[in-house]
Image (cartoon, rainbow, N blue to C red; front, side):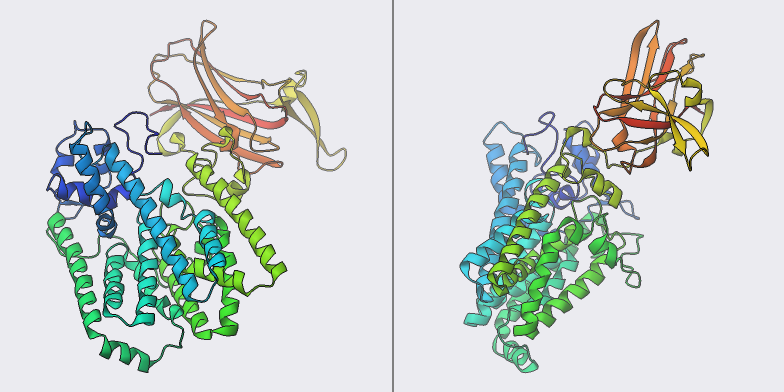
Length: 579
């Protein structure tokens, strides 16, 4: 993926939020500049510097900073240093953003993915699951959830790193429980500090520590750990405190202030109004909607209720608090992403629950669960490809949009679920002309047919039926009467029945002069319709090119090159110009 770029200056692997996490590395180790002058004062630099500049925020005191925490960059550091060394020894610019650095971050994500999966496999063995079932659970979650997306498409984001760190936290906790060695407790506590400065809310993972204890937690056991293993706790705590101090120091170098809160002027959490239902079941980003395998794994709690209730209560307390806290975040859908990315960090628990479910079932029931899991893997793979191809949009999804693209990967579906920007709705325009087609006046056209409205003999209407045999619909025509053609737009309103989404049906704006086409634009109807097989309406607005010659004719019509027919009931077009 890191090679799929229009030219060598375009960024792909390190982008979006991933750029915000990564930005500490080149700023410190290459430019020695956490005031970001190398970005802000070098507007003539490489094109990918603009991607980095977009992640900088101007604080109230005028200083620029990245609001992201440094834990991800710390985990990426070894790979960054190797990339920097190779860049200096090769022809690639050692600027922190060229291809070696992007490949390094892709490899970093792959490494931490495999490490987290290995930790999770060991955890399954620890809780009594067979090696075969443990491997199956690991493989299913690796391929059947959105974890895959953040290892290959968006590898600079924090989630695959946190998945590995939290799985490692649980693993070294179990090593301590089995061997009672200080070093394992030290690593556990230190990892908690690293997790905190990667994504503070992810320390909620500590609530699930009792799940990995073979005996019921008690006050006496806690006292024993605290009294007999003070050295490991203190040293690990010191490392954790040092990491937190490092984050505070980095923020101070950027802004001149000491703070752990980088979201200025925002109400971070709305604990009295958590969006739990939308967080789990909503079509915008719902965890169970886009990762149904995680919902299936929850049935593994039945085994814990029957056999080891302290584990059941531990996991339930963890999930209830996690759902409440994470869905109370002001941006509960977590911006542009595939599925509910905030839950990826805790997939080590999901793997263990799925493994316990597979272990607890009878042969026939296990077969059903395995078949369902295989389907969820197939669904996740399809949705990953849809997300990669911009068919499944990164935000603003609805049930209608989800149904519209379900298991569809055709190129015609690209961007079909994206919100349609309508410049006519946001800018003050004057209407130059407004026309609607009256199909009753066009009843002689072969494509125009009668249809009955309501009960028999109540009313008769006309619509236009377009398909591959009769592809061109009736047109609305405008003439450009003046040479003032700056900031003109055309607004289309269509009412029709489109039987299926993946049809080659488009709304066309064609501009001609002296019988010669000088401009042509087609808007796929599946982008503006939310429902299919039933009467639906859609609207879009398109800005025309400037400097159109006087006397040019604008023709607006529906074109359907698909064998399936579309029935058009209404077509209205407006011609606007900016005031």
